[in-house]
Structure formats: C-alpha cells, structure tokens
Amino acid sequence: MRCPYPGGRLEKADRLHLKNVTFRQGDVGALPFADGAFDVVLSLNGFHAFPDKEAAYREVFRVLRPGGIFCGCFYVKGEQKRTDWFVRHVYEGMGFFTPPYETAFSLKKRLEKRYATVTLGTVKGMAWFVCRKAE
Image (cartoon, rainbow, N blue to C red; front, side):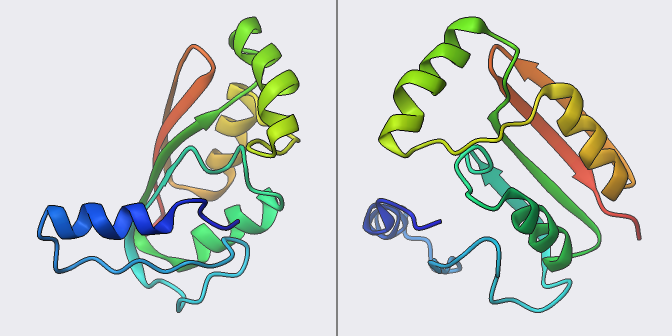
C-alpha cells in the first residue's frame, strides 16, 4: 500500500531534526528487509487499509527479531455501529479502507497464534495491541 503523503513525513522529520530515521515506500506484503531486522514494528491505522492482510501479517512477523515487539492500532468491526456504518459507506468508497476487517475477537485470536504474549484492547471502533515475539 502506498503512503498518500510520504513527503509530509520527510518534512516533519526535518523540522524535528531527526537524523536516525529513514523512510522507505513499498509493499507491506513484500517488505524489502531481512528476517529479524527490527526490534519493533509499529503499524498505526494500516491493517484496515492493506489489500492483502495475510501477507502483511506474515511479513511483519518475518522482519521482527525474536523477542521483538509488534504494536499498533486499527479499525475493527462490530465495536461501534456508527463507525461500522461510516467505514462501509464512506471510507471504502474513497478507497481508504479495504475489507475484510477483523473483529476484536478475531484479531486477538490471530495474534495469539503467532506471538508469545498479546495485550489488546478497544476504544470504540479501534483496537490497540502490543505483542512480543517468542525469543
């Protein structure tokens, strides 16, 4: 999935004088990094938009080192009717969200199959999570 505003991130990094950050644009379903390359993988509002969610879950797990942390948040269906309606009738049509979507239950189950520890919660229609890969 391509970031719709990659330039904005570069400008913000410059304003904050960040020198140890690199931005790469690519396909989350085929990450251009070695196995175990990262200590932490952060995904904010991504998985509800990714067209191939299975590939994204596999790639995140692959590039995370043993003992590493995967954390983030994204939309889950079934937590708030108003949000579900808005996603279906507005965001999908605009191409911002791509079904199928997780429920909080299905997400917890999916993460627990891969990760040694999983902490997950919801706030209205959003799930947040912190997972640790086994050592």
